[in-house]
Length: 292
Image 1 (spheres, one colour):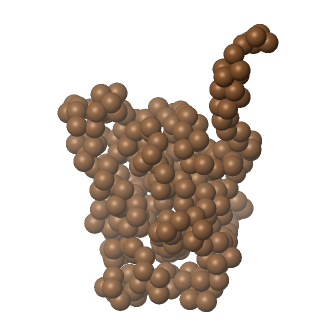
Image 2 (cartoon, rainbow, N blue to C red):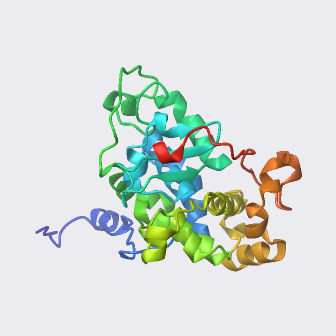
Image 3 (cartoon, one colour):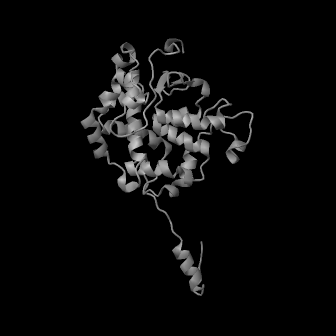
């Protein structure tokens, strides 16, 4: 127990009392607000988090995927020609292969991480030497440790200047909430999250992959993140209500469902707001999902 004597110099007492202590609201389940997302995305570079972990956290929010799926993601699972990440049965939590459509923001992150790990097995792989110095040449990398994302966030939460602490899994919850808030179907969100289907019909009889709906969801996430992260300051970050109004007024969910939207040149299919849109994607897949 620290006992500060009464005759301790006043200047020292004042110094101790002046040390700021950041107190976060505790929550086991938290959904980031648009302003939280702005701070998280734009202040990551100010943290002491390694670049590989930073990009992994951003990728989680862009794709709504699980931490373990991102940590063990391999370059061989990415089909760049189709803009798809193939999560095999062995890695999917529900044991069912998942095709994750990649929007332009997600592909941009992969392009950035490629210069660090592109020669190795794991996309967001871990190597102690590479973590210390990004320019170090290493012969291999390993899957990131289970606690890498959570420990990195926990030790750097003060940088984001938020009132609530959050975990990596909250990024997935946040993405799902953003989608439903703008009118994207909750049932489609469940498919996008690759949750185990409920009911005999969904589990046994309905074998449709709903890829178009998933792709539209990823485009919705891209639009939302573009709107939020491009704001000049937190004062200009659009609210959920504003984003919802934009989606409803422009029919964006249905626009992103149209095949013609992806067959047009990018300059012709941009919404009124200037956002980075995904590259056109064809539907002649370069792999056979049944054989994977």
